[in-house]
Each structure stands twice: as structure tokens, then as C-alpha cells.
Image: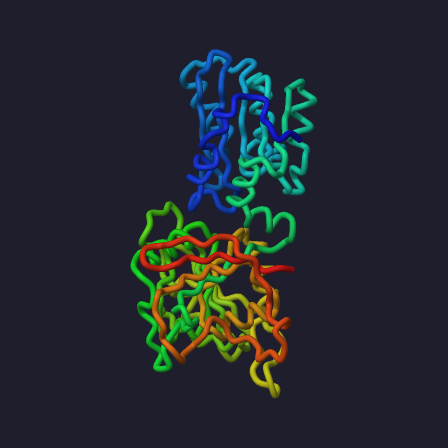
Length: 380
């Protein structure tokens, strides 16, 4: 590994932004960019396309080949290790070898067990000069952040869970009478849709569906793909006419309800285009109706290829995710207003000591219109 890439520094400029163009497009595949620089200085580049479409390396190679460029001895700059396995597409490392590039600079190794260093090994075996950037290199850091969900799914076997909340400065998310629209500004709402766009799935609870009937799709920013919409609904109370269910995009409803007792409701939901998934957990307090097993929900979403899970729910479901230690990051929009008593961020506690609450580290604090966007990550 090297802190300094074996090429002019400006050759790496903008690769992270190029890879970011795959947001809302490439899931469940990672967001990757490739830049090819020929020996006479021609530059060709590309980013990952939709699943089943060409990867970044192939997009760049096709552009070079269409221009009739001589790629022998060229340098390939890639933000993630070229794949070495046959999936929906052939191995990218083989495409680079066939093009006779002379050098490959890689920002991150691919933790996918189907790759796991084999891409780099096959490139080296073909006589190509391979350089892997050090973890602290700015491009490696940016590539890791861009693919934090994919890396989480590969390394931990679960999505990266981001909990989004909009609140007043004193932490109120809704007034005592339930009014919550709109605490934060239009700028914050648009920014929130950008975070929905980068997620593989957006999850909420039945309480939010019954109270607000949200769509929870991406509308305020352009996107090539709508994230999967997910509802946690223990008793299967959701109406087939709920706005969260119709296309574009797919909808999942996780329930702990009895299949026989809810057969008609399940049939109606299927007719509406929703998929019902049984995830019963332990009974609630005093033997009440079983709750949905949230860890099982994450496991199922992992099998479905969900990289980043965007949680937009009420304080009760937020609290359940937090108490079970299933949240990785808090995305908090704070409005410059005090609202007094009402619903809080999450139903956790009560605690009897200050050290009992979950601990976080601030990751980013950014003004968004008149509001603040705070990103904080939970310490494990």
C-alpha cells in the first residue's frame, strides 16, 4: 500500500465525484469509478451502471475502444478492486488484462468474498504493475464513505442503518397534538430526499403510515431508481390503498401476524403490489401480540442486497432500533426553533445514570438552509 499514488496527483482528481454518479443507479453493486490514461495522455472514464449493466472499468474501456485509443501500457485508476468473478457481468480484471494496460491503481480492496484480493492477484499475475492506496489516502477515505453500505453488507453481513430525524433545537419531532409538518425547511427536506436516494431501502413503521400516509419515495431530487419501501407492521394493519405501496419501486411489509387470520388482508396487499414477509419475534410486554424481529428484518434485507437502510419512523420504532443496537448513524436535521413538550427523537430509557445512554461521535455538522444537518455515528 502507498500513501502516494504512482502517477501525477491530478490523475486522481474527481474520481470520487465520478463514482458518486452511481448513487441511485448501481445498487446492490458498489459505486465505482474508473479512469484510463493512455501513454499519449488520452483520458477515458466511466462509473458503474445499473445492476446487470457494465461496471466502471468496462464503461471506460468501451469509450477508449470506440475512440480507437491504444491502451497498451495505459494506467487504469479504479476506486474499488476490479472484480474477478462471473456474476451478472464478466470479470473486470480480465477486461483490463485483455486491454494490455500497464498499471492499475486501486483505492480500496473489495471485501466481497467472491473477490477478496483475487482481482489484484490476477492483475499482478498477468504482469501488470498494481498499486493499492493506503487506507488514509483521501481517495480511499472518500471511496469508503461512498460505499459504506456495500462494505457493511460484505464485512458485517448487514446493511448500514441510518436513522433520519427532523426536530426542533430542544429535540421535539412532533407537537403533543401530533402536528409535525413542517418543523424543518424546504432545503432540509430536499436534502433528506438526497439521502433517501442513496439508500437501497427506506423503512418506516405502521404508526407513521396510519398517521401520515407518506409515500417515502424520492421526489425532490432526480433518481434513476426508487429505493425499496419497507413497513414494519406487527399486526398487518396497513391498508392496501396506503400511498407507500404503489410503484414505481417495490414495497415490503414485515409482520408478526398470523397468516391464517390475515389471509384476506395478505391477498389484498399482494393485489396492491406489496410483498408481505413474516418476521415474528418475541411477544411484547405482558404477553401482548408479538413484535416484528428487527434483527431478522435486517438479515432479510441483506439477502435482498440492501446496502444502506434509511430509517424514517416515529419515536417508538426509532427507540426499538436503538435499544437493539441496530443503528449505525444518526442523520439529524435541527430547526432553529423551540417547541416544548411533544414527541422526542426516540423512545429510549429512562436511564438512571448518564453513562447508560448510547454514545455517538460527531461525523459532520453542515448548515442546510436555515437548519443544521448533524451526522453522528454510534460508538460500539
